[in-house]
Image 1 (cartoon, rainbow, N blue to C red):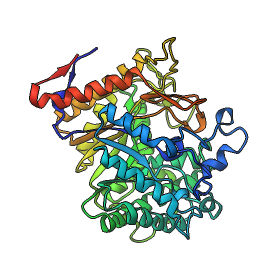
Image 2: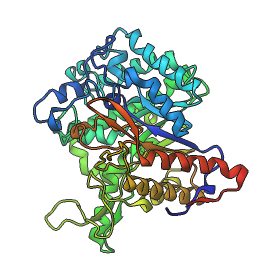
Image 3: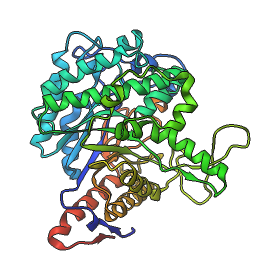
Image 4: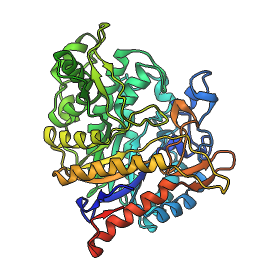
Length: 456
């Protein structure tokens, strides 16, 4: 095991694990929950591998007390979960389902009783199907619908939740769901993607104001999936390609949030298909936030495309790859955090997701050894420590994910969890990475009393 500079992390650094409602909850038709776009997408033949869906998932809805016990064993400070919009407002707009809110009430109370802080994501992709039927995120009216939902959640939980995340990965919702068609709702329109991006950002800004009103004293931010884009060479074409990818993946969301304007080079590129940007929209989007959530899994190496496209991804020859085919590039997280601190100066940053899928199997003794995931986590946590040592205001790290779960269009094929889930029985089995992460957390906490600098 490598030495990790754990002393770089301050004593109050937050260690956590992350999940999402549709991926773990199950109980898809219980206690008044309505249909989501992911329910409909999963029911559409050919959209999800093996025809899998989230009807049962990990059955977290019923088994969460045992999962909280696992969190306590892991030793985490915080648990990131999302609230399912269709569980709270089954019709997307209109009557609030108290039984849905009751579940999150119990979950928050039980987490707090266990000494675990709830970090609540308000939207992690499960749009109510009636909202999609009425136009979905490309329609501006969805901003108002989301605001009404946020009011219901913050009004119920705001007295106990100290950290709120408005949206998770709006880039994925916009492009993977509305332009590429690989995620729900399965649209294939660049114009829809750009309209979705704008309305997600606008609803974020409005949600920030609501959370501040209904959950006074709490902190609120947004989570973006961000990459550090490396140019493959020093040629102008490679640098231009990297700038384009950075604008597409990163700046289109970072700039309006922190600078109150969309990046001009991308505006010029998309001018013909941009949605209406009304007076006051950009000011609303740029509401001050308390933290930026960063999801990072890999960092691309980009070169000019000789076939006329904007860019192409260059496969590195000297790196490991996860089961998703993603390259393991820990220094990319370090460089990304340094860049965010330099160019955007957020008050605080949390790594809200970081992790890796590997083809985990149980051994003859029932255990799950996953040395590759352990090495991945060590590499990325070490990179985060380097960023903190360089002055980045990183306040916490959340491993993705606590549990193996429904991995969107991949179904149950790809396993990201610290805890193995036997989907036939729903048995939970902590993996080697669970214990390694537990030990890293314990070592970092011990440094204050035992002067522990690194853990081997």
